Image 1: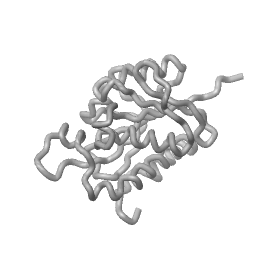
Image 2: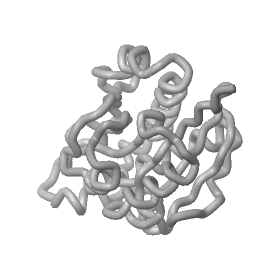
Image 3: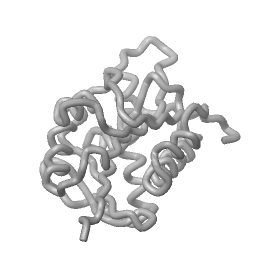
Image 4: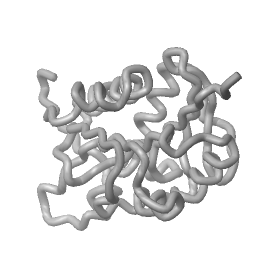
Length: 198
């Protein structure tokens, strides 16, 4: 009898209350929303990562938050993948992206790192970028701020009006990837700019 296929969803972010509502923690926010929606608590700790195991629409899934800080996200995830014997192609990484307009989502089957330190660490741990990812647009700063200050900064009052809707839409994108496949999810969620009406 073939082994049941397992999926691993990784949300990237930084641990600690001081980072909780920052742009760089968009991956954590979506992971938390998945946990709430499907009653999966990422409260077990192993290899410097928090994780929970449960079912999303009948698909057995691990939700994972590396807590080694963004720049060191790769090794904890690699250890978990090896420990639970999950294929790299069955891993989905959720992360913020300053090169996408605020609220925009892009799903990719694989690719480069775009300067994102968490993705750089994952690519180092896995020997390349052959893993799917969901990129969540946080935009660039409208004023002259460094990239670090921008992504580690909190959302503006105006952005906060739409943040819940964006996180919910990202959750739905993950569910679509799991249940319908990445091609259908890309058709549904890619290249659509977030608007008040969407």
